Image 1: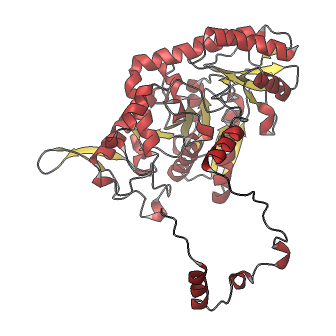
Image 2: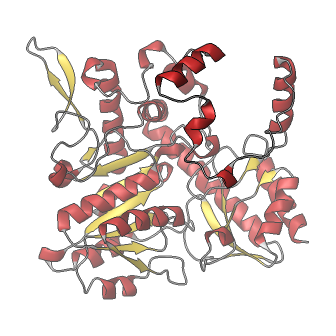
Image 3: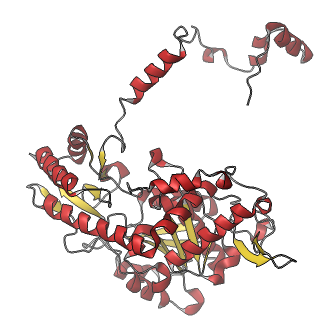
Length: 453
């Protein structure tokens, strides 16, 4: 957008047109005590080179994943991003606005979304997937809303193993709809308490929500959770809703295989950079039974009147549901660019590549966990429970101080669980991806031991 300044004469002309003598007349409604008494202390103007040097100096004071070896997780992970992704996605054929509101005009956009949906459905083992949502937390909220629409019971059961940020967002949406969120605790092994779940399900609920793996890295037993849910009277059976770590599906059974009704995920791990928290990518899939309640876009493949392949928006005529009373959601867009990145990433890796990445995450995480657990004052919070690439530690020193020492040594050492303001098992979580080398794992363990000394 061009900057079009106005002269003093033009400003006076505009003021006269609206019946004002001076600019200050427009501020009569502002209480006097809110006025600044002194001018804003803005320094004198400098050259572009001086501004750039100053900004670069300020930026150099930041420590982040780009300057620290990253062992933090908690929902966002430092995976390797092949250069081919940027090369493909930056081609002009994929150039699009943030959201293509009139998507039928771009067959290329619709084809990419169709491919994305197909890949997500296959990854999740589910029957249908939509064109993406804002992020993993938002996708889980939409799953809750779908379940509420399908079952009509203003009661949702949520495992405490779900990411605390996700649970907070669920609470925000639930409050406006007068939905009761019933928390289910964890047992000593870090998994959802099945006995407590069975008791809670003695009353009707629209959904049971859990994570695989959970926030503390522990692998849940989905079959046991699904069995508990399915044992409820058929007329009152809640939906099984899961949020998963997509990279783990290179090794673990997908949600559709163990009976999920709705499966969601944060798609950042599929080729998207950490990027200060976004933009990220919400994955959403479900069984075909709930396709009419699924939020957002759904793209299908058909043929036109000349028999040529064509891609169209399916089951609705526009991006947003028109019949408000019947709509599950008011979502009217998708993360088009981020979904394209994830599509290229999944295509490049393929099933074998994803399995290799997942396997490296598991092996390297277990190697590091063993080394850290041998340090005096450090122990695994759930030593007997299987985990994927993230695990929880108990440390005898204050976790924040340990992480500060690790940052000084060049490591983003993990997630301090104290930040979530509630009773947490353990002090901090540590995550390992395929990017970490043997040398980095060993030097991180040595730095951790130094921080604990």
